[in-house]
Length: 198
Image (cartoon, helix red, strand yellow):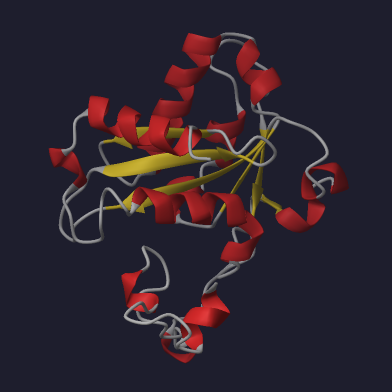
């Protein structure tokens, strides 16, 4: 389909008419500042092969979707690698505290099912994800509730499911929009739409 569009085989339809790939411009990676690995967390290169191969349910990718510059409210998005199930949470800030509190609340709600459901979580090296102990440690007992792995800097393809979901969220919440104006009910409706997408 994209090749047909790029070769002008459809009259009056181009990439700018698509929800994704609107301008066709490639990103200039030379302008990006140097990134540093999270040296304290576990690298994605140590993640088990079964997770890479998507052989087992229970391995998730996590990211945040930010709103208008100068606003604090963000979305925390969890994507299951096999089933493509999505969980979207509206959180008050892009901070380690907000991310850990959201996972704590989810664990309290799910009980011991949390550890069975979230065997691993893979995220980027964003400042909000750096508290790996807070993400991994259970609030119900002294043990671990999950294992977190960190992708390599500027390697979004290592969390491809999550990145594609974020693009779908942008259909409803474009860049530059204040996320705080959306109710939790509206966020759940977006989650429902994504989870029931053919």
